[in-house]
Image (cartoon, rainbow, N blue to C red; front, side, top):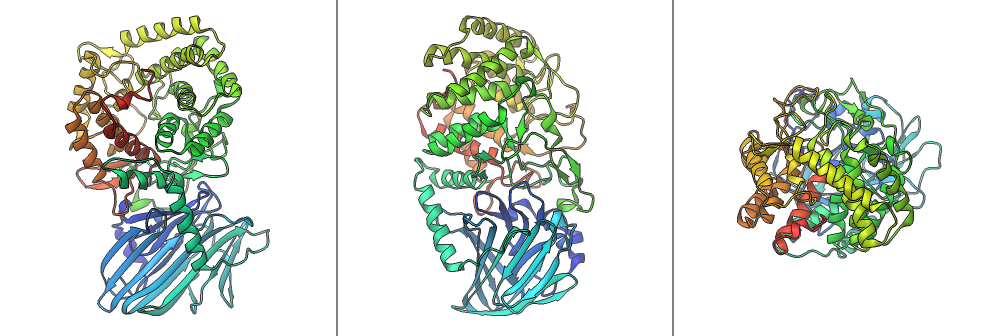
Length: 611
């Protein structure tokens, strides 16, 4: 580790996604690197502009580092107990220091706080604090003022206050401090964001905030109903899901980052700081089987509010509060993670037509009923409108598919299966839960859709279902067919599909979404293996009674977690590194569900289906 900051050093950026740990307060979050640098923080929400953007640029785009000035011999990290408080221990020739990072839960006065507590453990270590504040994704240099307890910064709607006992000095629009930590000595610093037009919030006592935050997370995870050999991994995944929940609305953000690449140097870089409808049923299932009924109800209610309106205007994703306009743009001044550009803000896929979302919504509400979240006639009124739209013939509309292809619209097999799911769950709402609706018409249409899928979505020459009608390509989403109840897991058509996916889409034992070289998705380049697809394969193997294979695959997936138990969207087997936005809710949902399925008796994996 360098004693002075060298901007040129970042021209040879060797950072990895797995170098980061997550801290958060259920409004937003930050990523803290192994080097003691907070490189990503958006305030006041997950999808707000960042004022630490080094993750996607350089130090000049904003960061806050506390670390030894001398060479670091060893770095060890852990979350304290079952919390979202991360401790990093640096060992140097001179001694050992601990850095504790966390974000307290929101205060009534509003604002966002980040607390950093540095403590000497052994010896006397020369330390350095460096902070560069840059608003609006690193493009705006704020007006910085020195004050007795630190400094303040303001630009447009944003204001920051750094409270610290350290002596600070400014240089080149950044702020630094050098100090020595001796054994037993503690120095705390608190950074607070607040709207610039409002009064500055009072300071927070770091030790009280640490105690309160630790107690809150421990009480929250104590509600978990988790058993089996993978309890630690499941509990960490549940904490991660809670950290990715926007508590005012119950919306679950897919990831707290944008533009972390699916291929280093590639263009498949997307903004994931929104809520995807496709995640609905999987997330509900994960929360409910783990004992979190309140969180599941909040997610269900977010889904209801977001999708209410014209069925023809149904979107695949929404903002944290259900916002519909998520315009996509590129930020030219950020070079991208390890030079992977462009950096994108917003997501143009929000305007795509994806027919699978109708089934995912119907399945989510079906799951809520099955697990006792309670009958809701307003939800049924929305469902009736969705079903009327499909029944009018729109079930056969083409779309962009689950993976948000930016190529031509097609009749994707999985999307068509999910329209079958929509009719199936509508029938069951009448049969099992007493709702009023044209069940006979829906049964007939369910059979019609099924026949259409078996005729056009299955290639007998390949003995496999295919990605879209008239095509030959495979799609890992086809692994969901038995999980949603469309087909039995041991049906020869499904067995052939599993064998084809294992033969053509598996790399080093892990599953790719599609063959990007054969896919006409409007993009160039490659991507890693998509982690949740491998969890789906493990679920299929468990359903088939091949539990040894399923367990081995699951254990390999667990081994991909970083040192603090976090997973990203993808993994590159050759480079042995995590890829994509991080941490990824979908990956942690898959971990929770597969662990549950493997822990329970054979056949449990189909519990979320209609069987």
